[in-house]
Length: 170
Picture (cartoon, one colour):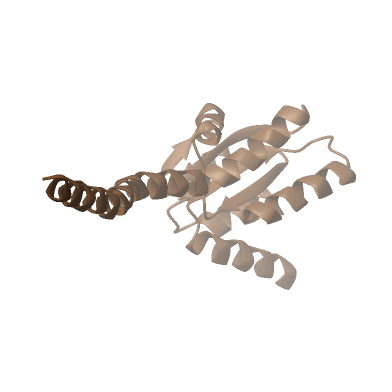
């Protein structure tokens, strides 16, 4: 009993800062494949847990993910992500490679997602990609300004030389 309460408490604590929960059926996957998935998930910050649905319902009760309870049917693996896109990408890629792993849906705070919504989320650029694009966009005007400022002294020197040559020629 204490072990079950500890699992519920752990999952509930993970939900506190989560931005998405994705549920997938894992029936028929061998241990090696699940271990492979867990390694990929860890690298992307995705927390994976196999949990009885009754315990999962207790964990989500009173959280912004409470509506997910309607999707909790069958043997499910729960992915809890801080970055919804990264979590969806890991699970969607794994589902493509392993037909026995089927995404059943998910939730973001106060909204439930279908399996198609999760797959669409996986197609979005990741947080890192978006930040890189933003940095590039912000950097472009600065780079142009620096190039212009670097050209000014050369033009100034050429102008002075032209004036000097014009005066010495007269």
